[in-house]
Length: 370
Image 1 (tube, one colour):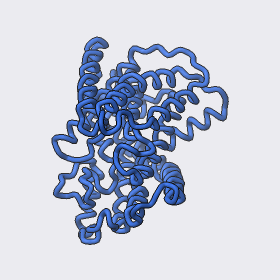
Image 2 (cartoon, one colour; image 1 turned 45 degrees about the horizontal axis):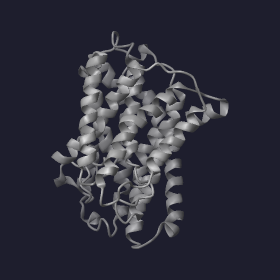
Image 3 (cartoon, helix red, strand yellow; image 1 turned 60 degrees about the vertical axis):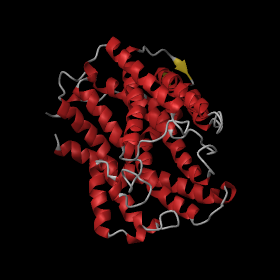
């Protein structure tokens, strides 16, 4: 069927802006992470929670955008729309990762130059599909399911959530969905406080442990967002974008809690943020009123840039990590010019990808799949 006939709804502008804020923070997190002495002292201590926040936003938008169209929309049509939206940048990220792969040969990845070209091409082609790669095909050495663009793991779980939503969980009553979300939240809380690392990380390796972590990190926020979109009744809140952005930054930049002696405390903090604070932020953002044209333009720019930035920045982070590894003991005080250069390059790459690739390709796909 022609899914374009269904049209689209106006965006939640502030939620679009918050998605951009989250994407920028995750870039900062990936730039400071290589300089940390351990997982206990990263400058952006909870940057990995951005993925959970984005899953929550995805759940909200999935219900808002499609709830009134399922009488006209098939499961195949829904998945077609998701492919049109997500896959172009998946393909671009994997391609750029393949182009830059051999240039990241370094002390942290000393065997890159020994990987045959045919294997890089094969990994790239499999990466286009987001099918997770087994450890036997790890060409970089980080045990990533997508070693040409690490962030591909989160898109894999995004698709899983979308498929579950389309196949039947969207049909649950509010009470049944609430029970499902409570159960998923309980499982997430248990994982957070019992995880030996004391945090909610993992999901990027194809093994039982990481698959469990990935599902745990995905199911609660996505379906909590779905439930929130169903039952909440937004009110009018002024200056919501500023306060929501500030709160997101505070949550993610909060110093590690509990230290090495009380890891469960940090897990409890992160579970609290995921289960309670993030939904409050999203509800506030959905209720927010854009104050002026400038704020509207900022939110639109950040929203447009968020997905290209998320999907392409790690290609440059690989180069940055390689450089850091070749300069052992370097501090943030000395590395910041290179971090700033990488960040600026990521913004430029994302914008170019948006204007010259993502928008034209998605328009072409809509026309071809009409």
